[in-house]
Image 1 (cartoon, rainbow, N blue to C red):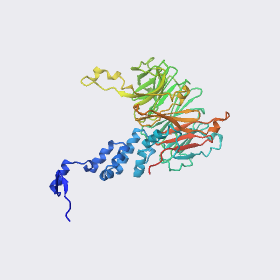
Image 2 (cartoon, rainbow, N blue to C red):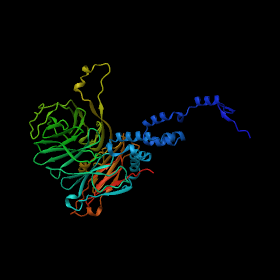
Image 3 (tube, rainbow, N blue to C red):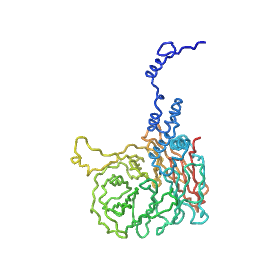
Image 4 (tube, rainbow, N blue to C red):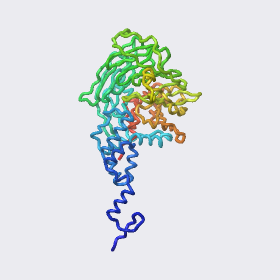
Length: 504
């Protein structure tokens, strides 16, 4: 039986080699590209787009299953979310683990969009973190800090004891009964404040301990979780005769704070500092490159960091206040009344975005600001542009959403928290309300077609809240990248809740 001839270029005839070449030239297919080219193209795709490309044809499906594609995708996601680098053992992860981890943020975001407004979300997995000293009064956990990525957790027990735990990068991992490291912080009060930041190499953690007893003290500890024997190591201490401080920020190398009408910048690596007078109240501080930006009641003030000089411990006269009054190089009006910053605390890369919450025209709002660089003007010399006295970045408001659900109670502002590692395409805000952790999710930039969703992510046990003699330690730490939430319990334990499980 003769075969039915195929139709090529409008004619019924058998395929010849010459016609096949003509067909390929006229009808080029994306799947005909070399494998190396297909892999390179996927470097510019989001993880979900790579999965969508897999559904096109067999050759593209095979290209999306290359291990190098998902290693690059996960590293790109980690950079975007500012994940603590040691969180994922990327070189040892399977292809399924790489795919699952790369798509965790989008799967968690989809879970929030579909399930949050109706009822509290149910975690897919719950693990309990217990301290061997939990039965003792000073062994109970009452606070925790989850590092970006969700693997490493720093807990505070009653008193001045800190622990570092490895929760595992996967919800299927059992939590070890012993912490990686433990330390009792000396010479501080039990109500000391704790702030964490990544080290300059991205592999370790800096812990800022702020104590306000007879005088203000800043202690900076360092720890590398994946070292052979992790330990907390004191690397720098700064003492200030004043007790009051109203704002401070930590970067991988600098500490800046404001209090008693003065601003101090301290390089704790080189142990050098500078100080200048700022009369107005400062609500919050951001450091970017060689500049300090302060949020005040009605404006942003940007200062060039003056030359730093050696710091002499136990004295406030190691360097004079230089100068007596340092004028800002730029002031930008903030249209939000009663503003408060919400900015990522872990910014190993240069921080370029932050949120401001407050009121505008009497209505509560949350505004997203982006630090836009000032670029040289083409055709004009650098000297004529006076760029040396201009700021490198200026804050520009790029988006605003209503904040009625968030600011119905002014007291909630102190619980306002922008997640450290959430994607720029989304904004998520958490706050505490009557024993519940509430969450609001919106698209960035704000789209009127998709309104923000608000609901309860977690609720602490109800019966205990009705007892006036019982105080629930409503503390939490949240990582939207991994969909992991750590909450304190009345039993002095930490409950590790995973809302996103590994994809099958």
